[in-house]
Length: 150
Image (cartoon, rainbow, N blue to C red; front, side, top):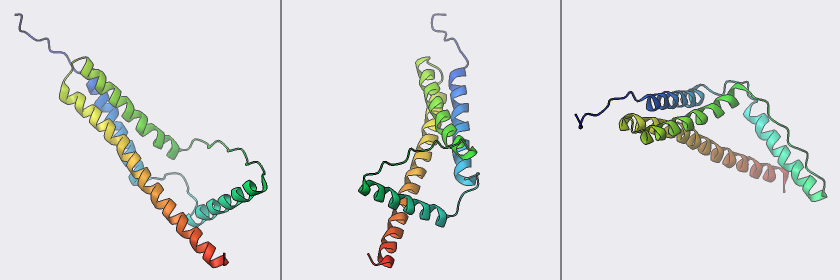
């Protein structure tokens, strides 16, 4: 009987897998269906951004102080963007704890992997969209400069 192994249920890894699955579903849902809140048109956003950059540069050249940033209100989009990585982080922590508690290794690895994938997918898509936005903004500013004769 010295060789008998006590079989325990992998509760921590199972909960981590549940959190990781929820995180992945939230991130994929927001990527596929979002943004859920009403958004300004691309022209409005780019025009306002270009105007803000110009006004900020003028204030800096004149030595005037920049206005204080305003806090963004919590919207459904912002909540989903925040909740996905948090749940993914919880899944990673619970999967790691499952390793420490010597629960089922496959289940713990899956919890860590799904949590990490949810975080990585959101970071990857944000990075690609930011780079594309900067390239678009630079192209528009370059064309505005050539149109205005500067």
